[in-house]
Length: 113
Length: 113
DNA sequence: GTCTTGCTTAGCCATATTGCTAAGTATCAC
DNA sequence: GTGATACTTAGCAATATGGCTAAGCAAGAC
Image 1 (cartoon, each protein chain N blue to C red):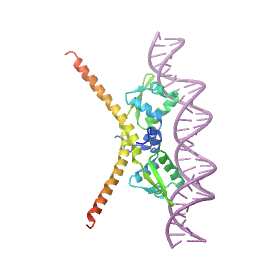
Image 2: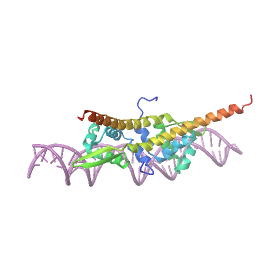
Image 3: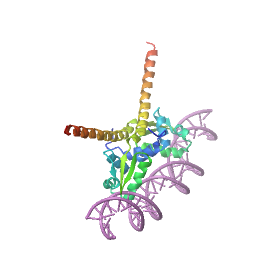
Image 4: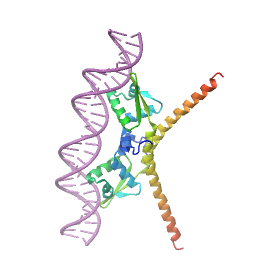
């Protein structure tokens, strides 16, 4: 991960819109141009460009212009900080049960027969 | 997962705010009351209540009133659909290289010596 | 019963977001 | 060179979001 402090807020926000998620899903198959990404959504191109800007600002995609075509590509590494955060919470939650187990086990052991 | 179609938009949006993430992080340690959750943020209680409503609407937490205290608890299962979505994109991305490997392998095999 | 504590509701305001249309630029195909 | 294609920019409007203050309700402590 290149960035020291990934902006989780930008990342999660970027994924909070169904159109943006759908575009990323398409890009997971391979690069695509703006018009192709716009197709399924039914939204107008300026709107799509705005959504793409959100995704690019979050680091989830990169784009490059080749002639009149702008090709967009998924940056899968950008998904990792979010997964990391989710995993951390899950881990903390699981640790709760471990601590509870320890507590109950200790209680049983200390319990006078 | 109880819900047939988790609302990914609600879920990702709920995590797009640092205050809300911080509160979930705290709840991963165990249930907490509203005033305790508000403490670290420095925000006023009505604002906190609004944030909690977002989290509850997304299914990420549950709350119950006991006397004058409202206790909030993390619902860790609600994190799973997001992880699932992230994993799916990662999987699709990896599959790209598998398909590329197959293609290149086939190319080398079909290549006249 | 009175005071304190822990929320809760209502309303306001500033900012952000999300969609659109209109107009424009640049590349490509013929 | 002309027309088509693929964006791109600017501006507008409606809605949503995120913060606040003020006022209120209910439970708990004494």
